[in-house]
Image 1 (cartoon, protein in one colour):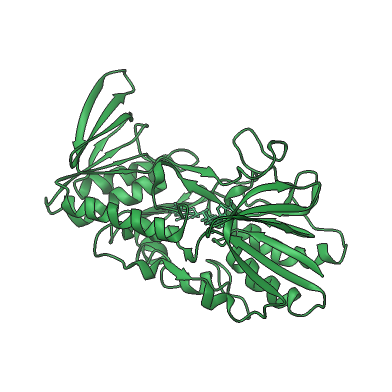
Image 2 (image 1 turned 120 degrees about the vertical axis):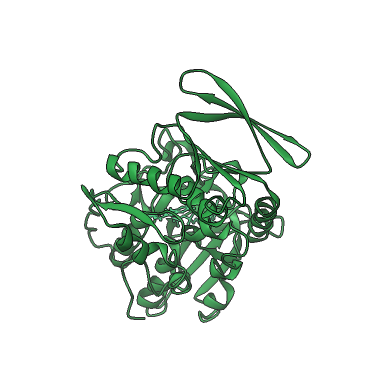
Length: 386
Ligand SMILES: Cc1cc2nc3c(=O)[nH]c(=O)nc-3n(C[C@H](O)[C@H](O)[C@H](O)COP(=O)(O)OP(=O)(O)OC[C@H]3O[C@@H](n4cnc5c(N)ncnc54)[C@H](O)[C@@H]3O)c2cc1C
């Protein structure tokens, strides 16, 4: 029996699991797949900037139980192990898993797929935390803070920060119900390669819904005092100030979930060194897709393009055939939702109309197709036959 082990059950893993099960594992003798992940539910990060606004989207719009999805596969062909890879020994083809239930289990593989993604910093539920339960708990705490706050502060000038400031501004600031501040390090939100015109429009749209922009500024210290959080801020000119909030919403980036891999497999930033065949450098039987890999930025578009490539090439690898290269799409494509009626973005060097991005992304934030994504039947760009 040969075993394919997939680490992760997120955006990169979900389509791969179903499509490889159907194309290969279920149709060939002597093959089995084991999926290892700490989350009982598939988590859809794209809609989280709206989900944190109390009453906007229920948990079940962004979290889908995996058990009913995996139930269709026979036990001799498929196993779901609820736990987290804690150690990888590529010389022995062995991965050790810290089980959610406690204890650990060693799993041997013939082929390994690393799709462990990246976690949000500051213990934020933008992505899966330790488990689905912890993610839900943290999300509900944050929603409660936002509900009860007079002042909300979003910090971090990336896509998640801009979109969250937009959602909170649309719900509360534009009507004057609550103050919403957006603290970001640059003179404009977002950063190159996002076009200057897109960054300017982001600022303009947020200002229209009365978000208070605190540019060229970073949060240097966070202190809790009763229901208040006191933020110490430092501006680019070195001046310091404080801002008091009852709902602090940091959006300060992601860290790759790769602590289980030997240091020799990782680049300087902790991403698994990934070849253009989507293999881990120096390991022909280890593949890497999505945010955990070093080849592309942490974007769903990249994760899905890599996964679609691997769906085609993994069967070739199992046959011992030569693998074609994966080509990175160098066009910069961004869609930035700014509240529930406006958006901006770009396709390569061209800025796109607000209405187009709102129609494509902002209306539903992908929640209209996320259940199919979780089931491995669809990605943003591809609908599979089965
Ligand atoms: C708020 C937000 C909004 C976003 N919006 C966009 C957008 O509009 N467009 C876009 O292109 N991208 C967007 N992204 C980025 C996108 O979500 C990621 O690129 C995508 O989720 C990457 O998929 P992944 O499967 O590699 O990782 P993840 O989705 O993070 O999945 C990783 C999986 O691995 C599991 N895991 C973690 N550690 C281990 C371990 N040690 N062992 C086993 N399993 C493990 C996790 O529990 C999870 O199941 C957004 C991200 C956030 C946070």
